[in-house]
Structures are given as C-alpha cells and as structure tokens.
Image 1 (cartoon, rainbow, N blue to C red):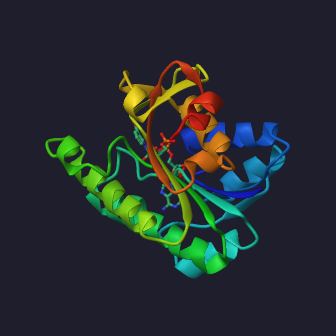
Image 2: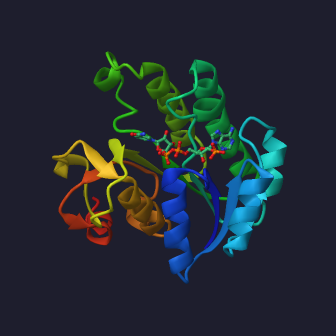
Length: 216
Ligand code: NAP
C-alpha cells in the first residue's frame, strides 16, 4: 500500500516510519514542514515531501496524489496556544480529509485521543480546547466517504513499546507507549476489522495483531 504520513517528524510519526520501512507491504511518502527535515529523511532513504497543514487543500492534494492511504499523526503540541489547536488539530486535519477525497485516497487513519467522541469524559479537562478540536475533526471524518480508522490512545509515553495493547472494553490502563500506537497504526492499514471504526487503545495484554483481529 502507498502510504502518505502527516506528522512524520513527530514522535509517533518517527516510529511509524520505522515500522513502515521494516514492512515490505508498504511504500511511504513522509510529509514534513521544512526542507531540512525532508533532507534528513531522504538521507536515510525515506521519500519525503514538504507541505504544511496551515497551507491550502490543493497543496495537500498535490502532495498526496498517488497514495492509497493517509495517516494523520500531526498535532499542534502542548506548547502552542488555542490558535494552533484550531489551525492544526481541527482545520489542518479536516483539510487533509478534503485533500484525501479530492486526491482519490480512500483509506484514512487518524491518531485521535481517548474518548474524543464523548464530551462527558473531557468536560472538566484542562486540555478541553484540544479535545474539542479532536472531537470535531473525528466527527467530520466519520461523516466523510473515507474508509477511516480513528485510534484513540490515552496518555502517550516514550517508554519502549511492549507490542501488547487493549482495545475498547478490554482497557484497564490509562497510557500507552508511542511506539505501540505506531505499531497499531501500521497493523491497522490493511486490517479490515478496523475499517470505519473508532477504537480506544491503551497498553494491554494482547499482541497488536490479535487485538485488531478480535474487534467485533
Ligand atoms: P508530536 O511529537 O508533537 O508531533 C506532532 C507533529 O505534527 C510534529 O512533527 C509537527 O511538525 C507536526 N505539525 C505541527 N504543525 C504542523 C503543520 N502546520 N503542518 C504539518 N505538520 C505539523 O506529537 P506526538 O506525540 O507524536 O503525537 C501524535 C498524535 O497523538 C497527535 O495527533 C496528538 O494530538 C495525539 N495525541 C497525543 C497525546 C499525548 O499524550 N501527548 C494523547 C493522545 C493523542 P514539526 O516536527 O515540524 O514541529
């Protein structure tokens, strides 16, 4: 599968690149927002393209044309204000969905946040504006024609991955290593059980592959 990765210079994004490079099933185009980042990726054998989620939809269409799947793991981060939350986490995400539809890319995987769909679960959260952005981006994705998978991880950790996750009702923990999120994203690309589903993920006791296969 030809995969277009948005957020390639991010912490989850870098793990996704590693797993995609290890797989012989996928061919990657990594989107970054600076020429320097693109040069570094190209030097390590990764095809890259420079584009910005604050740019136009057409810029994104041009960058992703020819791809078969989009992965969105970009984010404005905790050090920017609510303006960037709107511009990147909400509008940037939605522009990438519009671009995918225009470019004829049908498969779309969103790295969202735990229970972003459930307002009650984050009504008193200190990161409520971020959750609102994720909530509406996810709602627009669900109502699109794209074959989506929305993954909702809890607190992201930089610990090494365990390779084991829990999904939905099996969840007992509140966090998950970024490496395991990346492993789940890559495994979900062609796993039909994940198509048009919103899935909460945390550290758990099933291998990523078994956890995805056990989805009802
Ligand atoms: P990260 O390390 O902050 O990476 C985010 C990436 O987004 C960065 O590479 C950044 O580019 C890129 N980006 C920001 N603005 C952009 C723009 N305008 N155009 C293009 N790219 C842009 O994030 P992470 O820790 O890997 O998180 C991955 C995802 O998980 C995000 O969607 C985040 O919202 C979500 N999430 C996080 C948590 C958590 O606990 N932190 C929990 C649940 C979900 P630069 O490298 O150029 O800055």
